[in-house]
Every structure is written in structure tokens, then in C-alpha cells.
Length: 305
Image 1 (cartoon, rainbow, N blue to C red):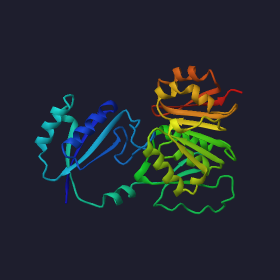
Image 2 (cartoon, rainbow, N blue to C red):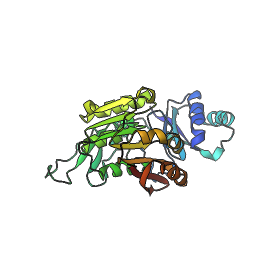
Image 3 (cartoon, rainbow, N blue to C red):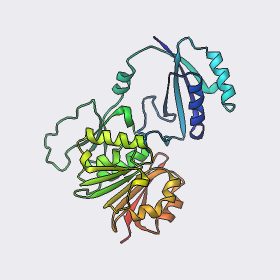
Image 4 (cartoon, rainbow, N blue to C red):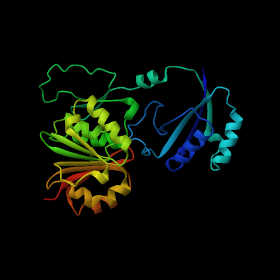
């Protein structure tokens, strides 16, 4: 059975109301993607956690309706529910029925970060390294695309993965605050960390992290907590990929969560938001530096001894 697809692009703060309106009008499904991506399938890894807002400034919502849905009626109803919506923001297309799960899975491609780290969807087998004992041997993290994976990656996640790949993680402990899919904590474990703690305020994110950890054979070394359930303890390495507001508010807690001399990185920061955070974190951290990708920023440094 074919479907009618309705697409509209909105700002991040408009997304929850727009998605609610589409569901109220009987949408069979609503999917989100980065409106600024160069290609439609260049999706982002959802960080922070499952169920939270993506970090994209503008979002395209694709809603599927029954093929016989009234286009004019849908447009008129959306105009009433979303008064700020302009008619030229709506786009209707007919899409053929297909195996949507298979099509979703087939989009994903392996991605590399730094010298060794690769992210693979679980349905694609990585090659066997010719020299698995070599210093540049491929380190593979397998993720379930249905939980938290895309054929591209959000710049904040990429910045954090590349930072982890550049560290000596052997035998270290790491805390990943706002763990989402668990991608950063799992990557650290696959890169040699002894144990990891993942913290997220969304129970669904903890479920996704646990599933992905089991898929990668590291579940026994990953402890997962809601913020209120985690007892404060310092780690050898600290990373948080959330949003600028919480990063500022939680700076004292993050300082307490990093051992003296511990490398740290924070991201989820839009360009222009870094100066205030640099000033805030300078109270506890040294060697602060800023790295950027597109319109996003990572701040890294070391906990003051």
C-alpha cells in the first residue's frame, strides 16, 4: 500500500508542537532529520539521550499518512494548529510501500573517527585486520541503527569520538554524562578503558546504552545510572555531550567527577556559546582548548591538580 508523505521544516523550538500536531491529525509515523544535511539520508546520531531533542537548529519532519488522506484538509488543519506555519513549508509526496526497516538499515555506512575508531551498524561485518596486534588496528563499535545511529554523525558526537581516540585509555575509568546511546562510553571501553559509568536522565537512553553495550561485549564493564541514583565518584577521564545550559550549571559537579589531572571534554555547544563556558570551567580546569566542526564546539582540557 502506498502512502502520502507530508514534510515540513521548523526551528528546534517549534519541533515538539509540530510533531504533536501531526500525530493529532493521524500520522502513521513521524521521523526527524537534520534540515541542513546535504543529503536526505545524512542523519545524525541522537545525542543526548533517546527521547530528548536533537541538537539540530532546524528540523525536517516527515509524516506518513494513508494514501487517501485529504491534502487540502491536512494543510488547513495544520494552519489552525500551527498559526506560524507558512503554506510553502508543506510538501506532499506519494511514496511506495516497502520494507521500511530494511530500507532504514540499508542506509547506514561505517564511519571512522581518529586513527583507529570505527562505528559500524550491527548488520555490517567489519573486515578482519591483517595485523590485529598493530598500533593502528581497527577498533570497532557496533550500534543498533534503530536505537541511535545514522549514516552521518552529529558534529558534537564526532568531536568527542575523535578526542577519545587520541587518548591513552588503557586501564582507565571514564564517566560519560548524558550517555544517550552509550556510544562514547562503549567507544572508550573498546579503546582500552577498564570501566565506564554512563549517566542519563532518560531511562530509554539507559536501555539503549545497555543494549549496545551487550552487543559490543562490554556490558559487564559499563555501569548505568539516572543522575539521582549515581553516587559521586571521580574518574580518570570525563566527557559530557549535552547542551550549553546544563554544562554551565553542572560545572562544579563535573569538576568533582574528574580526578586531579584527568582529561575532560564537553560538547553540545553552539559556536558563540564557548566563551562563557571557558570562563566558567577555568575555575577548575587547565589547558583549555576549543575545537570546532561546522557550527559546533568541543571544549577540552585537564582537571587542575
